[in-house]
Image 1 (cartoon, rainbow, N blue to C red):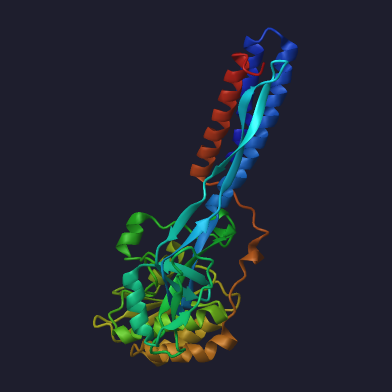
Image 2: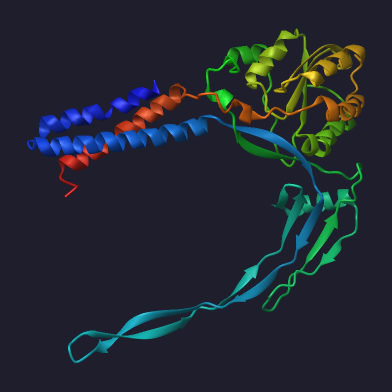
Length: 374
């Protein structure tokens, strides 16, 4: 439907021929309108497609250090010059003189706190800094910032992670990427899950991300089991471009896993999603169905077999098993393999494209008829 937007300028052409007496001018402005509108429509269509195919994946990481930066100040030298009138010469021309203005000033930098991970350094609150510092446990290390200061030399105090599992603080980052599958009608596109279908089957959304994200969903398991999954995503995720989600379902058959897959549109390219049919007490696995984007679903098949052989739910044991199999059985799907897919605008995108083209054309016609082009 998006191609219809390219025909909207015809309305303006008809108006020009009906209103303008100078037909040569009408032809000239019609050609400009058609060309300009086509360009605007093309650019808008490209931007709308980009917006429609943007997706977000979740990347595991962990805190490697937290830092307290002391407050400090510096003297900013800011000398400005300007030309100001200083009378006139014998011919009546204005004479100018150069005036110097000293706007130098003291600039104050307040204290602040950050956490560092493999992805970079990020700001945080004092409360979160104190919490993380206590978890890391190591002594603070002084760091001279060697600042060119004015009256107050602010330095830093760094608390490093000691590389132990016990003091590891898992993190999750959001990462945007282009997913052409969700903007296409290819064979990889999943059917839309209706809202009532989502409610009836108790499908889940991606959990919110704070510093970290809980990827164990709808399962009543001990905290140390949840932490084990978080540690797996934090420490193995970056190395193998991998992320594990475990979702529990009660009173549902394995077909609900396919609905969950469609609701998440296949999941993200780095995810292995393990759907488990659970007993009422959340202790026994009754069925297992996995999905990912891997070309060879080795890990999916082996995970299903694992839970068939180990029906007593133990996520710590499963994570230890995964660590052994990730190097050989996991290869993340490269979404550049889908670059050949042609994307199209959905209904809302097509409507917005028509509105943008129409508004541009209406403004162009109004300016032309009012003589605004000179």
